[in-house]
Length: 255
Image 1 (cartoon, rainbow, N blue to C red):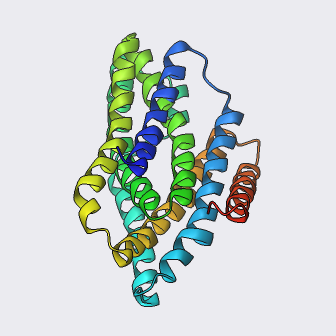
Image 2 (cartoon, rainbow, N blue to C red):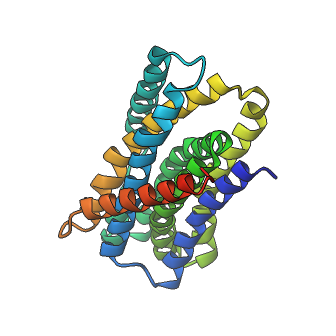
C-alpha cells in the first residue's frame, strides 16, 4: 500500500474516533471542539497559501494563468458544492429538541452531506501526499482533526434517535469511508497519469478547496459551537505549529 493512500485512510478513520466519543457519552467540550476546528483551519490555510499554491506555480511547465485558474476553480467549486449539499451543523443536532424519527432523518441527511464533503478531501490528501509527503502529512493531520467533530455529529444524534450504538457507529463509518473511497479512486484513476504539471494543477485546485473549507466551514462553525471564545486563537496556533514543523523539517533536510 502506498504511503499517500495510507495517510488518506488514517485521516478518514479519525471519523470513527469522533463516532466512538459520541456513543460512549464522553463528548468533548464545546471549547475543545471549537479550538480543534480553528487549529485545523490554521493548518489548512498556511499549507494551502504558503506551500501548496506556491509549489504549484513554480512547477516547471505550469503557467501562472493555469495555476491561478485552478486555484479559483477549487475555491468556487467548493462553494458551489457546499450550497447544493444538505447542510446541518453539529451543534444544532446535539442540542435541538427533536423527536427521535426527525432526529434520525436529520442525522442521515447530515451523513450524506458530510460524505459528499469528505470525498474530495480524500482526493486532496492523496494527491498532495503524492506530490510532497511533508505537505501530505499536514493536510492529513488537519483533515483528521476536523473529522473527529464530524463523526461525533453523526453518531451522537443517531444514537439518541435509535438507542443503538452499533447503528450510530455504522452511519458515522459511512461518512468516513467516503473519504477513504476518494483517496482509493484517486490512487486507481489518477495514479498512472500523475505528471508534474497534472499534480501541480490539482494541487492548486486543492489549495482553493482547503481555503474555502477553512473560511466557509471550519472557522464559522468554531464560532457557532463556542461563541464565547475567539476561534482565531485556534487558527493562529495551527498556523504557528505547522509553520514551525515545516521549518524544522526543511532545516533538517527532510522537507
